[in-house]
Length: 264
Image (tube, rainbow, N blue to C red; front, side):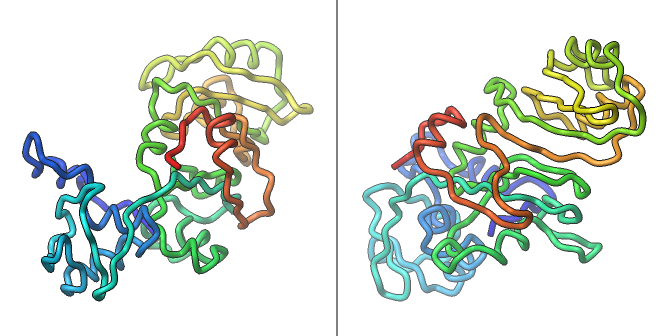
């Protein structure tokens, strides 16, 4: 599983070390994990232990550049770095954090996902696509393809995300109209949103941006305290699996419902 560490991410440090015109289109540990050969940490360990060779030469640096023509072996056996874009839809329970570690000991979404993945999918390096707060439930996507992370989290993609919040007061039409038009937060005005009431004290809010605690802050701006929050959908993909379970999306769903062209 891929976990978010403190400080600059390793991929950024690696990119800074790369020289212009480098022949490598990726680096070794990432290529092994996204192809499902070994999860990222185990790939890094195997490289450091001298168990991986590139074009017949043992390497011990995880950020060794590799490309489509590289011949890579693990423990003397050739492995393929070819990969397809995979996306998992996970129903996040409350309590789990989207960080790589949890000092409170409740657990992370990576731990939750690992508990339900079959052995074949355990070998991939999975990236959480965006975040959900500890107390927020609902749809969280994971992928082995960093391009999809960039696509789904980019402010220019405008990928819609639908939330349902239970709130501490009755919802008025003025509140909904204000939310739809956008509200002023400390980090700027929000984009226009879709907002509607579901009963007297429940709000459905669809956003095309993803700021820190945005739903809760928008509701607070119109006088509504958030009692619970659930993400129902991303793009046209809905949270259809049981709490704590997952399903893998098809290439057709990734393209048609998340507006991303998967690598196949």
